[in-house]
Amino acid sequence: MSEATETKRPQWIRQAVDFGALVAFMAAYFITRDMIKATWVLVIASIIALAVGFVLERRLAPMPLITGGFALVFGILTIVTDDDLFVKLKLTVQNGLLAAVLLGSLPLKKYPFKALLGSAIKVTDEAWRKLTFRYGLYFLAVAIANEVFRSPTAVTAIWSTLNLGTPDPNGVWTAFRGVLWIAASIFGLSQVPLILKNMTKDEERGPVSPDTGL
Image 1: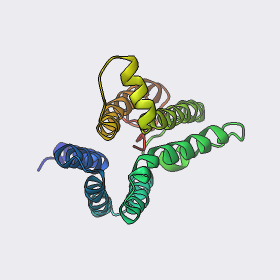
Image 2: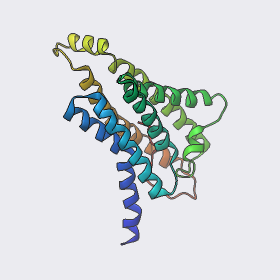
Image 3: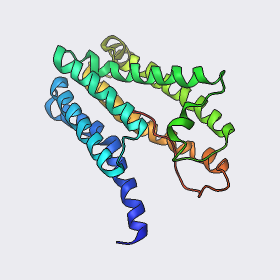
Image 4: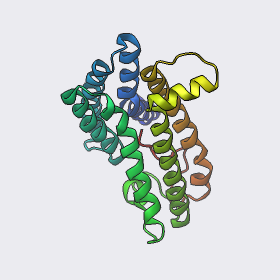
């Protein structure tokens, strides 16, 4: 196996580890139309993803650990209580906390992203400040959007306004998770120019962007 293959393979596998649990959850819901059963799949897939990530990298990367940890906690709460409120609330709590930490760190001139991702991305402190601000706003927007799409009342009102008929609130929210996945990827790619422009001289350039913490 060539050196190029060795470097590409972990990146491909990492994407599967990062987003595999979400894909499994969405597929399980649209097959079963049962949010509790889909949450079982989410919990099991999250455990597998964390285990695979640990085996491949010999460590638990911070952002996948945060995302997987929240998925496990809120997934287990959903299963134990038999209430899908918790699995839907996970995005609000996770992204709301991330937004509070990132935006709250700016006046203190502390950049949590640098502590989390400094070993993977070498950029100037000014770039870290901009990334912290942009991702803080992004996480806040995700938390707000999730509150809208997890509410059956809000979804019904939107569908009624748009004359789309009677919605399946769980199906709409699950589809929203898929759209959010695409939006997160686009947002991450949009940060690449900033990263490339501000990489330190001893760092080899490459299209790397922080994990969005889905």
